[in-house]
Length: 68
Image 1 (cartoon, one colour):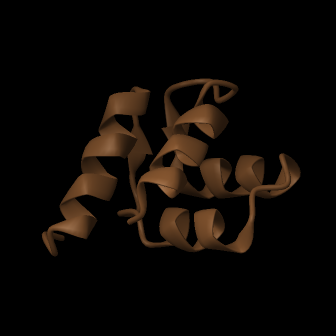
Image 2 (tube, rainbow, N blue to C red; image 1 turned 45 degrees about the horizontal axis):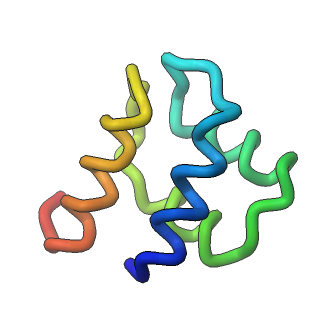
């Protein structure tokens, strides 16, 4: 994932109440007007509850490395 996308996701996460389920995160991103690329990255996250922003960042990094 491009660095710009990572920064956009981190900015988006500042307004999220944790813990958050993937489905709720996707809804929040859409409500906040996240662009298509960001929504596509979030859609690829594992279907789970994330306890803190770092959990989402780790999951995205794992996707970038091809680890699922």
